[in-house]
Length: 146
Image (cartoon, rainbow, N blue to C red; front, side, top):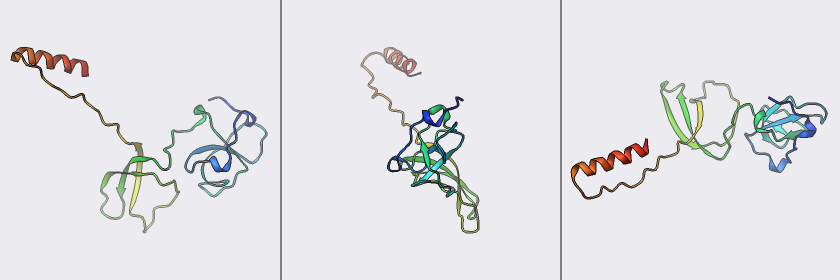
């Protein structure tokens, strides 16, 4: 991973920062960027720490591809105190939070992933002809799909 000077990076104005997105942060403009945080509100990250400068990160500096707040995802969940079952739930990501599991918690999210893209198959019409001709036509279609 390349090291970036803070002077090489673009600062993100408060009104353009997206909650839940990872940014480079610093209290000073000198030297290399060495800290990244998840934005929460104004100049604060999700842990409540305030930072003076927030920088847009180049793709190669992102620690992971973060899901975006406000988009729909699939969540693997485990019901902790109810019965220990697991399942998949779809919903809009409302934000990020750090919480400890305690007696008031009812489930844990293990994984967040984009919704699967549905496979759209072409409409299939079988032409008239002998059974052998129709089977050959279907084999051709199947080989194109593979």
